[in-house]
Image (cartoon, rainbow over all chains, first blue to last red; front, side, top):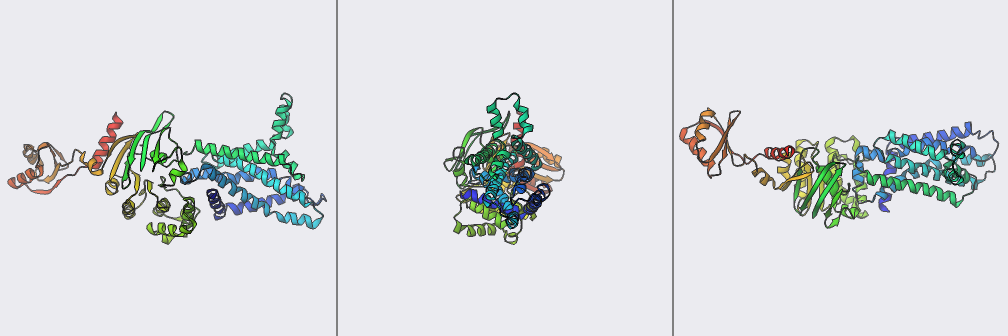
Length: 244
Length: 307
């Protein structure tokens, strides 16, 4: 546990020692604002809720989370520090978990910094804060899912750009798996059970469920499983392919 | 104690490490010597548990590095090749991170960090980000993190690479000073380094162990061992005259310098000095050769390449 926390702290401090953290936070805040106000018609809708704000999170995460996750392991490989890290008396899972938690907390911080949106909506009207809280939780869980995929992709390569692109592609598939454009490909021939299986993989569907304010244990388990699966894959990749 | 048992590491058909077995006892400073790509670094990666061997294993103080890598690593301080470190951290932050990761008790961490900083002369740069440091300082930071937990076993991959001559001396002095009761393994391709710090040398090429000896033992394998070299006027005449001596097996002249190889009979140096005095040759230099490490290294590793 201490090993995990130590790696996590080092990683978090690393974000703030470089411009990465500040650039990310500013871009994230600006983008969420633009999406909510212009594309989501936050004011014009006349509802005191944060739906226009949360609706675009999956699409923002699609690009911004890989930007955070791409360096997690690729940078360790490039600079050779992976050899230093993995010869410390740590297990690989402690290192993987520590790095993941650091990035996840960092995205959590970015979400916390959007609280002015929440204050605004409460000022403007009588908002359902239960629903908003659930949506924040759902958004953070979904970010964790993206992040676990990105961390795993980052472990595959020493090149951050390759890690970035691979992450986007895999995240995109997970995002889209519930949408008609994907489902139509399978509708005509696949049995219902396969269709349900593919549809149930969708980040969008589970996220939408949570943002309605219903925190269903199945949605929580879903994101926990996604994160667990990709972190496990991350560990396996590192074990199999440690040196370049 | 380190005990390597038939360590093998192959990548496809390429054998980076091929059936290495050896034991290292406390007090030994073992030098891995070999051409680039010989498998020195890979062997170190196997010993530290960074890479898993294809077959075989190593015991670190009795702990199997394959079965129990985390426990085995606790006994080891390791400087990976190129001395990698987290560039955005300051020296102090980095050493604190390593100290915590090395499971040093929280109350002892400041003292351990200070000691490492003092030993490696890092006090001036303690608050500087590592990426802004010169190559020599980066190497010293790498050494500091390797010794911070006062490990019983130190594995240093090219510890003096990139250092200037004074820094090299300093690091070698440090290694010798730490050697008591410890096991230190260094890899190098600098021959003088082996003679300067090690009390045992293993020559590795193509992943195989070709020689395992003390530096003096290796030097004694040189064909120059106990040969006599002299620089003299009219070397050809002197050569034919000295070639008659019973103690001389063979004479070579290279760039005006005469080298007399011993036949095995004792008293070569005495016989040569007597002949010089008797014939009143004008000798400007005369020395007894200990042997040449580079020549031994070359003959051992190139015989392997030819085989």
